[in-house]
Amino acid sequence: MPHFEIHAADVEAAKAFYGGLFGWDFTPMPGGEEMNYHLIEGDEIGIEKGLSGGLMQRMGEAAAPGSPIRGGTMTFEVADCDDRYRWALANGGAEALPPADYPGIGRCAYVEDGQGNVVGMITPADEGN
Image (cartoon, rainbow, N blue to C red; front, side):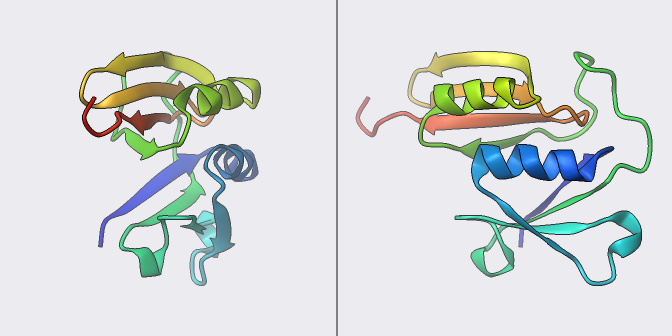
């Protein structure tokens, strides 16, 4: 099963950011207390849904805002890329790549989450366009 992890210096702030951005819920993982590890649940994310995710305490320093990516970039499908982008900027996120259309793919944007991670959003192109 695919799994991703988000590392955060401030776990509560990251939970608020991703919970608001994608509607995710977080449950402390038994045995993960030392790392402040939380399992992620959402419409298409969770142990029973084929993709699992975790949010945990960052174990070292984050890369400086605006610096090159030092890890994977997560991109998630959203209904309205522009709406989620505006939400992210109004709620502690910073611009990494503003919304743009990519023919045959969709409308994409990337934001920094305030925790040293970059997350992408995509509203897929309509079939046939």
